[in-house]
Image (cartoon, rainbow, N blue to C red):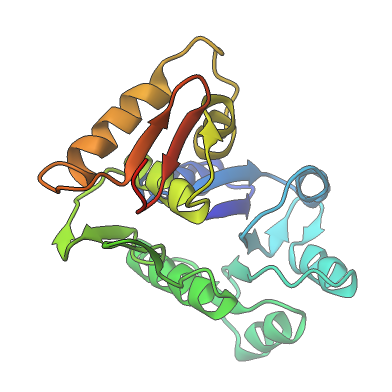
Length: 223
C-alpha cells in the first residue's frame, strides 16, 4: 500500500516509516497539515495515518476536508488522547479507525490489514497457480510459500495487478521503487532475476516473461 503518514514527532515518524517499509508498504511522511494537503494533491494514497496533535492544528481537520470533497480513502487516527469522547469525535469526523499512543506495532499492522480488507485492497490476486495475499504480504505458487522479501513482494504484486500487460523497466521503477533512479540502473533486471528464482524455479511452465526491448509481463499463457 502507498501510505501518507502525517506525524510531527521525528522518532515516531522514522520508526513507522522504517517498519512499514519493511512490511512492503511505501510511506510518504509529512509533518504538518499544509504539507499533507500538498502531498494529497500530488499523488494518490491507499491509506492515511494521521496524528491529531500537530503544529498547525488537528489532523482530523484534514480528514474532514477530504471527506467533504468526496475522498473515501481509509484514514487511521493516531493520538495520545484516550478519552472516549475524543475517540468518538474522530470516528464521526471521518476517521475509519483510531489508535491511542503508545501502541504495539503489530496492532497497527493488524488495523492496516483490516482497513485494506474493508476497502477491497485485501482481495487475493491469482495468476495461474500463483496466489498473492496483499494484506498478509505473502505469495504462494502451487501451494508453496515463496518467502519473498519486501521489495520482491512489491514487484510481484505490481506485476500481478497488471497481469497480461507488458510493463517497461521505467514504469516498474516509478511504481515499485517510487524513486527517481538512474535510467541506466539494472535494479529491475536484478529483482526480476530474484523473482524468477522463487516464482518459476522448479515449475514446468514459467509465469514471468521477458519481452525483448520492452520489459516484463506476468501471465499464465505461454509466450
